[in-house]
Length: 199
Image 1 (cartoon, one colour):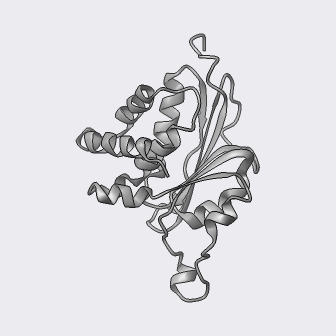
Image 2 (spheres, one colour):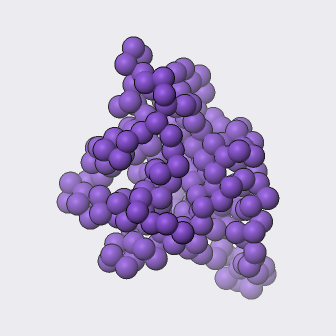
Image 3 (cartoon, helix red, strand yellow):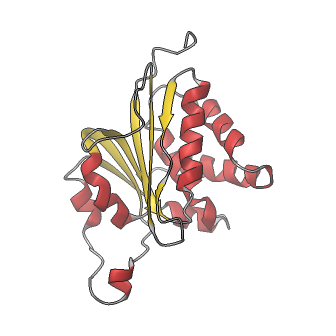
């Protein structure tokens, strides 16, 4: 693509969470962002159990030329995790020089709610053994705005500060392109809240 901006480095983003958390929309925003910047983008279908509570993953890759949408272990520049335990489950996909962006929100899996296992208490520390970690109260920030379902947009906002090559305006345009009109202003507000958040 002739209008590709060479200042934008290639990136692999692995998105993980549970059903109903907005992983599909977050993947679409990222793909739109990169495509609009003239990059080659590959995005796989979001895999997992679509019902609320099931584990869900999505892969988005961009660069001058991308041949496959699949991110292998140790190759993700960013792991975007909507839930702490999912972040830990997929942390080994992060590059050592990558960034794990994890919502502090916890959704105990069935094995925990049934009493067979305990939810780990030391997840942020354990994530740090894989890559640099940004632990964001995304769900809490969204809930404070009365928009708990927009937690994924808050998390995108927090991550956007760390993704090289794109302006705040490019990110906002991608959100506008992907979010339904009736929720747009609220979601743009949630994105700005995440972008302004400093741990």
